[in-house]
Amino acid sequence: MEKVKAFCKRKNIEISVKRYLIDALGAMAQGLFASLLIGTIISTLGTQLNIPILVTVGTYAKAAVGPAMAIAIGYALQAAPLVLFSLAAVGAAANELGGAGGPLAVLVVAIFAAEFGKAVSKETKIDIIVTPFVTIFVGVALSIWWAPAIGAAASAVGNAIMWATELQPFFMGIIVSVIVGIALTLPISSAAICAALGLTGLAGGAALAGCCAQMVGFAVASFRENKWGGLFAQGIGTSMLQMGNIVKNPRIWLPATLASAITGPIATCLFHLQMNGAAVSSGMGTCGLVGQIGVYTGWIADIEAGSKAAITPMDWIGLIFVSFLLPGVLSWLFSVLFRKIGWIKEGDMRLDL
Image (cartoon, rainbow, N blue to C red):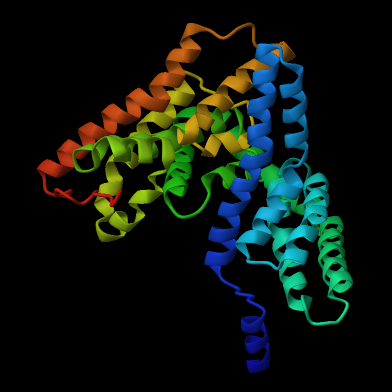
């Protein structure tokens, strides 16, 4: 056992929750953003502005989603160059065979392929053959063996959540909004979770509401400490910046979380806000306005498919209220209350910007 531990340490193979469920998941979300998400945005712009080259660029970007995710995961696992580059083939296989649950299949398979590749990397004189062979063989073999089942399971869970949200939009609106919103602020990736489960439709709208509540909520609630820099850093960047302060005083999380519990059912029951763009957008909130762009691309896709007649004023009102106005007002009101009763003190949400 000691020899195994020593070998793993030498090869930088660290079996831990942080590396696999925080580092790898977060990197996978960046891979998704750099391929599927940005490709969707580019192709939508091309369609709306009638610029064919943008449509072509976006199409190619979207097609690279599997390799992009796998390479990003390998980077997070600190894989050697030959392992990293070989993961492109692994990601393509896992994403295709995983179907609708492809992102989760890529996460699981790429981790195994990367670690096996790291284990043999630079152990032989023909490393340029052995390392890519082992990485690709293990990855593609596991994709054939595991990916369909992993993808089906992820898709089933996502479909169950979406079905339950359609059936009980009020209660599921609260649950999905709060859970996904909390995931966004934690050092894990809400975007990757939404992508892995394929959360779209009303459930995607609730997830978006929860993420917006966290980002806009913290930005507004901490404005007195962080001013305009903090407003933009958290409101368009990430509420994860507050994790250090949350550890010191968990009560500062209450305003944004309570706001998400309110905006979630408002999104599902009142505005019927649906995310019919890329599922990864559901977990992005107001980060770079990606969530809102995702909703818009979904509207366009629905119009092209004939399931939606046009974008209505109520659509825009719902998106603006759920994304910006309600989270800001509610979080500010809750923060004022908690500051008055002493649960939140001056400086508790200060960031070193």
